[in-house]
Length: 71
Image (tube, rainbow, N blue to C red):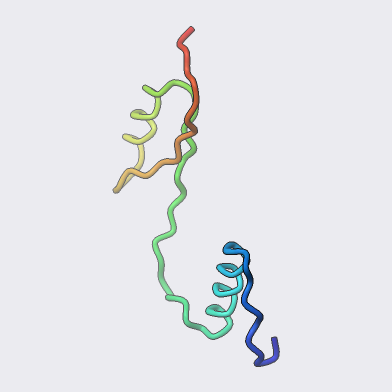
């Protein structure tokens, strides 16, 4: 970029990525952050509770939603 401002993008994901890169280059990002990995829970919904109970602290998960039929 050599000091020039990048063009605005009409695509939100591109604009977000550019703004993150620019903030990093300008050292405006926080030095500490809360980085957690959320498990992806699929299959038997009852297994979700077992997975969440095993997590320390606040319970966070990504859930794939779809038709589930017990066999």
